[in-house]
Amino acid sequence: MSQIVPLRPSAIVEGEIVADLDPLDAFEWFLQIDVANGDATPDTIVAYRREVGAWLEWCALNAFSPLDVTRHEVQLYRESLKNRGLAVSTRAFKLSIVRRFYDAALRHNLVKQNPADGVRPGKDLTAPEDKMKVLDQKGLTRLVEAIAGDTLAGARDRAIVGLMALHGLRRIEVHRLNHESLMEADSETPYLEVEGKGSKRRRAYLRQDTLAAITTYSNAKFNAGMINSGAIFVAHGNHGRGDRLSRQALNEIVAKHLGAANLKKAGVNCHALRHTYGTLAVAGGAKIEHLRDAMGHSNIETTSIYVKAVEKAKNNPSNFIDVEL
Image 1 (cartoon, one colour):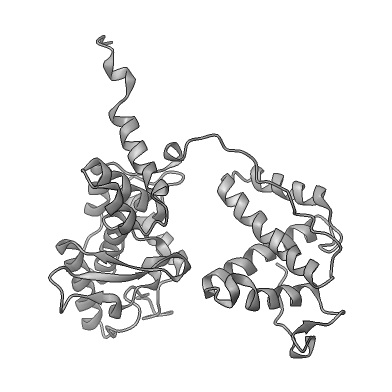
Image 2 (tube, one colour; image 1 turned 135 degrees about the horizontal axis):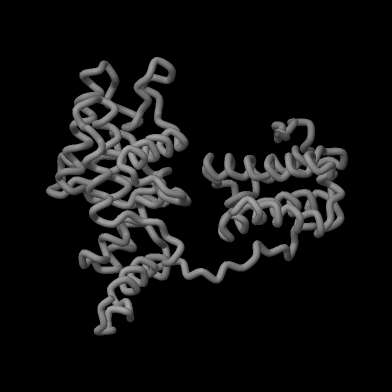
């Protein structure tokens, strides 16, 4: 895959990019200075680099020069994303990064126009609530029961699944948790300080069983000779022992237990556990504004998809037909 090289110090003269600057150097400068007004999180920058790298790799495989492509080539790229079965939202994200890549190049006179301008990701007329993958209450119970909590790894994995499915934490939020995130000494209701999207912070108030799961894992870590500071969820193997679990590792852990419980299907993953939380909470009577705050949504319309999903199932018109097969 093409790499984005670090910006050469000599490439900037009094804050301006020199004429012979490599386009990827310009994009690296753009990432460091322009994205989110210079306040982009490391995860955002990594995502931008990854998506630009994917675009450059596609160009190389198809013998296109990245600085000479036209709108047509970007449309072909969009079709390749569509053919891979990627959702409209994913295609939109990837195309937005390509567009910003050329915005950076355009500002510094490396291209004459932005070939990605106006290239849309395509339409998806499926209602958001109909695209969600969730577990029902029986399925979630089966998943939890499939994770033996009497081992170090089992204690960890039960806590991870609990935070995703019973508190709605995103994968990245679980990844970022530290022991110092847990607040319980001075509060009747213990909570975690969660760092969400855009570095927004919120409190995730814990159920007693979730707190017990975290405490059990923390004690097991200590007994295994690992420190109870820094990352809560860490690797246990010989390689990387004590290191913070990566997001990919979290995917693999959740997928393993879903498979063991015969619940693994396409789209049923870490984020499906978050959707499970939202759906089961609404079905159980949670107020939408409380759910919005707990899930860290900026807009209550985002949270409303859980209400719509539950209402569709509850008010199935076929149930009003008094005829049995």
